[in-house]
Length: 386
Figure 1: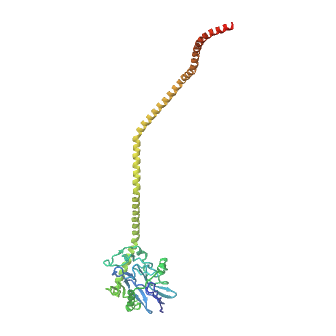
Figure 2: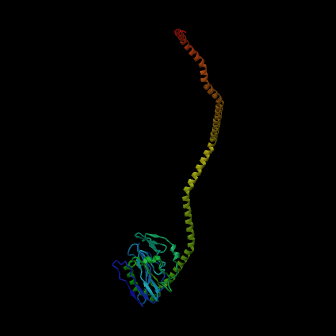
């Protein structure tokens, strides 16, 4: 049973074109394959997937693609099982990676989000821990192994739902799903059409082991990986070596984490020491200043004692002078009283001394007058007939 539905495209192709294919047959498991080197700087990896032509599944190889817009990332397509049908959800380009059913496509697509690289302005930086890049062709890279153990799984299920992967969209996935999207590029569409015409890619022919699993580009020195019967043992050995390497990485991860924690702790301690150094210097300066002040006090102590003794002797002299002055004042008080009494009595005595003399003077003054008055009186007496 096959059904095809599509929404109309807009002029600028910014709205996601949703193609849904429904069938009762489950898609085959995802094949193991190695990622070819990135041929050109700025190309992004589009994982391989199983497509359906109405009667059989065919494998579309993984491909390095030039993105339609700088800053855009690829959200892979996926199959989902619901209501007895397997439905195909087409991939799209957008600012953020959305929901792709929890399918672990590898190489940065572990089932949720994308950790194979990031945009920095107009340049794409590749995570060399998961991406196979040609260092002579790619300039911007980094190495982040935090996601290797988190997304390690042997589940090669190619669909979401009962019997496959159980995953639901996260809040971040829902935000990315509501953003403006762009449909697959013409390079991707031509690549899918070429796979649909190659019978070696059909699951009925290759029994889930397609001949071409991945390529680095279309039309340019098409380096392909062909999966043939004689290459199966070597590929299995490679897979076993990869699993052993992953096991070693998992075993080494706790030690690396502890080492990183020790390094972080040592760095924090170093920072704390550096931050505490000025405080220690200030504290040492205060201690040295306090010691100098203590030494100065000790050196000045004898001088201060001498000054205190001199001040005490001077105070004692002042007190003696005060007592002597008081004694003199006490001794001089009777003499002053006597002087005051003499001063008070002196006018009286003076008056007493002067009184007889005044009387004599008066008498002397009166004597001539009396002598003058006596002849006059005698004359008067004579007149009166005395």
